[in-house]
Length: 282
Image (cartoon, rainbow, N blue to C red; front, side):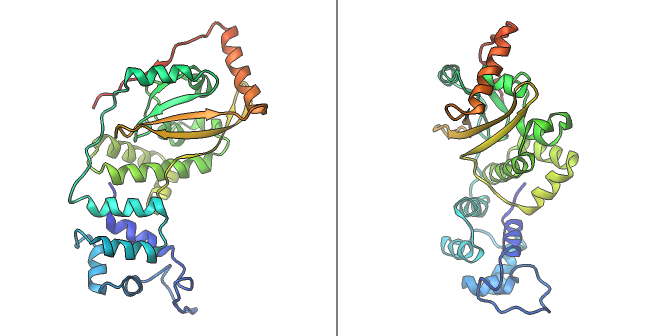
């Protein structure tokens, strides 16, 4: 699904030669750095670097990877992704299972005033609290946020920052593909998204990676209007590949009023619901 050769090619194409100390002129036809320039700046032979980009060189040393990361200007997330891709042939991580511990579901139920979800590395929603179901306007079982974002045209309006969301989702899936290259369900999902969305195909070809940790997330809800929320991602510590996502509103903000209104509208209809759970088996 992802490979070291392709990642190196896309990363060198974005490096500004002038920033790397390489003189340029109008006759230059290569976008970014040439292969031989990357090799020279990294201190490796041109032949070895060419073999890396062709997928013919295996198990590059830590020193080589460090040098490539420096020359290509990789950030911390990209650097970690580079190392995982280089180790794929040595050891591939097994895709984790999808069981959510009952204790985690109890924690989810305690989050009463903010939408909260538990997701796996494929962006399948494994569990969600009552407000999460109200925010998305649908039951949590069967929801995959990548499909929801790219393939369900009628739902696109929910995301006030749709284009930014697509960048985050593709970057996350790129990281997951590097970590779990043998996961057939992830490969199927990526193929489905590529077949159904031109934007996904374009973004996937860029090979950008993004780690989702926290940040602004805005929704345009049909009943209560725009909700500007803060998303906080908590990676669960058991190597399950799962994350707890909490979407909170700033105290006294219009979003806080909007969430309160959303919860109240549902209560008026008698829609009090327990936590929605979806256990996924491998």
